[in-house]
Image (cartoon, rainbow, N blue to C red; front, side, top):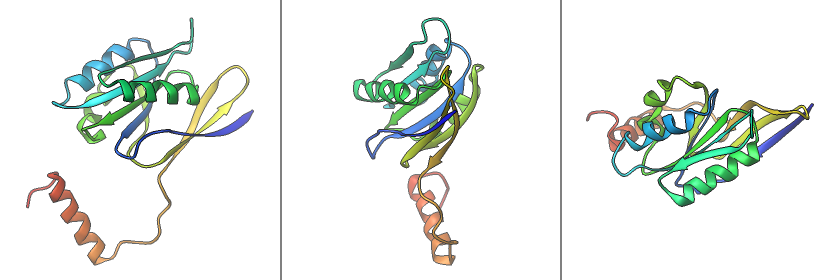
Amino acid sequence: MDIQNIKIEKPEDVNIILGQSHFIKTVEDIYEVLISSMPGIKFGFAFNESSGPCLVRYEGNDDELTELAKKNAMSIGTGHSFIIMLRNAYPINVMNALKNVQEITAIYCATANTVEVIIADNGMGRGILGVIDGLKPRGVEQEKDRSDRRTLLRRFGYKLA
């Protein structure tokens, strides 16, 4: 068994959602969730089919993000995995709707951070073992850090004043 780290390629202003699903219908269902989630959302996503022709299936409304999703899906190369690249939206804007897609079996991460996908390759196929999402903690927040966190959430509009 070969263990590899695959770095997700993305611009700094792009959020990703990495998950697993079990059926080709995922492609149309995720498209419908994303396009109807909020005005102005830009996205591309790709799904790795793991039987039949074993193709990278894709959709999107932004050519750059769709190409990035296809490239990253091919690099990851794990069966039934999908990657969504988002701009003008945050994962929090679409996560509940994605969790309701019948075919989705797991979400590994939803982030704007640097991400590496840890995969296992047994020669026949590949599987996601986990992800490294961002950096490790540098310490425990202090009172000023807590205040800054609360201010940030209010500035983003996620909490009331």
